[in-house]
Length: 432
Picture 1: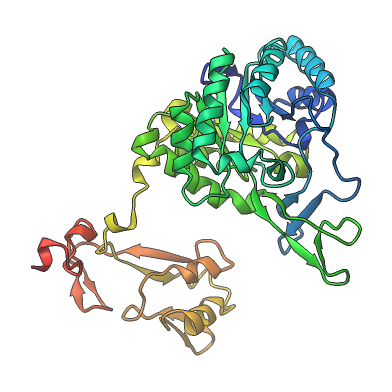
Picture 2: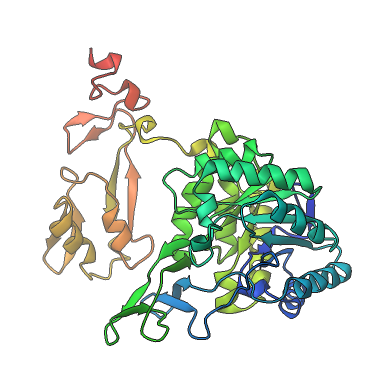
């Protein structure tokens, strides 16, 4: 069976599945239950310094976006960092690490952006025996208004400065957690690397308002008639997270910087996708909040079976897809496919026809008896029909071979490599 043991920046765990810093990791009883369920590691909910107290709301803290079947697609969270006393958290962390020495236990930190505050808390953290620290530079609500969280994460110079302090005053591995609420995620990652970070983790939550109560005319969750923006997480943010992980993994300035992938990991397949794009491990929050801690058992068994089936190791998986992520200009414009409909699988619902006829290229014809067929001379292979079809594999895309006639263009498929050599590109030599 595949070996899932993980060694992430020197932090060892029995598997690559960690619970992210969030409500599920706020206290000892939760973390013990998580380890008993099989989680390889936990990032303790963000601790603050002994300054002004953190006071959370005493009303609804979460807003939810549902799918058609009431499946949770995303959760908006207006909860702040831990509101429990620092000394209580530190005592509980020390107790848990003593009883679970084989599990990764990371402490998330967020303190004011001054050197003495970081120096003071790092000394206390090291005394717990924790395996490392994660710098929360991503939280977009509440703490950002105090000059912390994403207020730091959006300024590369601050990231580099604080990371240097942490590396100066601590021997522990330092993971910098990045905000997605920024134009180019590569810049803060580069700053973290310059500051000496051992790794980055991403993404933190996306700044959002998930819905509006149309009776109260206030954002949800609603506190006494008012609402606030919060942090959005869950399956809905996974595409954003995958892209940002890939951007850092393939960026020459951050090449080799370890990545902990976060954002909508719900199944083993999600985890495998993050790892294939360069993540060394993954962190999970919403799935645990939706299904409970035992969801990790499916992730463990599924990833192990996948690796066995592919006959690859976990190290083989990490970064395997990164070389295949490229910029649009390098895509092969002569790679040609055409949609084809399996009439034996077709249920004659007409979704493909309606979608293509109204919003695409009028490339599907409806014949007598509601028989739907693709018009090759109109099909541009946009894939919309595949996406809207309710029957898996009913509509697929067939690749045209080099030299085969394209009914739409009336020309054979050419072996041009990519856009830089395509005759339609005015900058290419082929166009001269």
